[in-house]
Length: 432
Length: 134
Image 1 (spheres, rainbow over the protein chains, first blue to last red):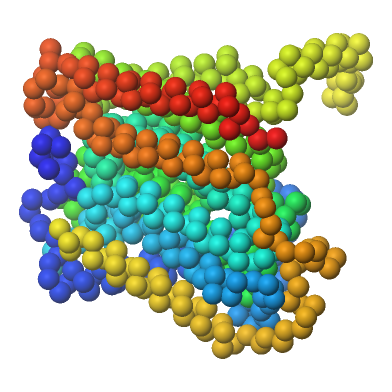
Image 2: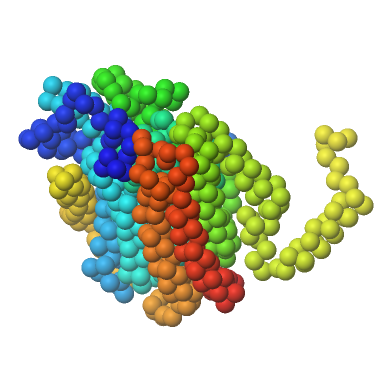
């Protein structure tokens, strides 16, 4: 371990004065943590369905749910309704797989979070409680492994329903999820380059000392966020359940609690993706603007503060998920695939080489982890972003609407548009 | 070491138990009165035509195959990324930093070679039109 990690003080949130809880207490606290976070997840998911509807209402200038307990009891009413509803199953469905599919998408969605640290260690008289359910040395790899299992539930749901819409939704979803999984995996390689370890604690520690990765690796964050949207099947990538084409996609035939399981899984995935974005790019539970808060001495107030900060970061990203859902239109399927394969994948590969080369240069110049490194990496990112959006792109690469048209044809249409506008200028109310 | 993984098993058991409880519990509370019409596959109101399990586009298979290649490539990159600092230094690191004047281009060069091989495949796939959806 010490070979991999030079600073002994930075090792896995180590506090030399306080050993972790041991023996029976370890299991008792683990069970308590599992119960509490699972409960928070379930209640949180219910509240997020309400939040989604309230935010959509706010964005579209409507009221949203406001009848059942002024809207606050709507999630409970929905849950109760799903518990009592009649359940249907198509006659041609494959019954065992039809029942298994929602379970298979529920399990990975609610297992992934267990390696994400959510707060500073809590000192008790039995020892130090790490604010993470399972402090695995393989941390990030575990997340990659488990989160990609979610595709089985979706593709089995689509196939077992024996419904054309469901089958198409399941196929689309599996193709989309595995396509974006590549760019998601590649976008996190630069983080591992900087942290030099796959454990999430060391990634958080590296950010506490070396600046948040959103500044160090802005382009990787951009790729990761877009991939996270595609992985969780959220708009603008909700092709698997595009309601205007496929009714409800892979869960068309599902009703009652089986549908609820899919719903819970979708929102739980969204929360986990938000937690991952916060952990990998926004310093995790690290309290902003305090660089050395993660080596102790710990106190319960620090733990509470860091948990609150982590929750705030998660909620912010959840809000961004919803905000984007009600702002952007849906991609076409060929656009989705070409964005993933022809833009994100090469960009992520080039970015890995770039960051590796910059790290080599920094280490040749003898610049250690810290403010200078962050400043240099940040300005390089700024350059790459300007290059991408202002010079290379201009509506050609990132919005791959060119799919069916020759680029020259698009240029011709653009020119025509501009000439038309010159001849007949659009007069707005404000212009008069 | 094994103890670190035990909470994962506990959580997995807990989640599986919950999923089964939800499905099993709902089997007790729901009423099921199937009729032939209710059991038809939903096709926007018109009677269902034929079976859904017919042939579908071969592109989905292509994407799955390409995914395996590129995902394994990602897996190969992870150990390289974790060990990059050590690979680009001739001597052991001091406090996680390479002593000045000992920079090695071995790590970067290795990855460039790996990516070059990959790039050939990627360009081939692209030119073949495997990434083109229409």
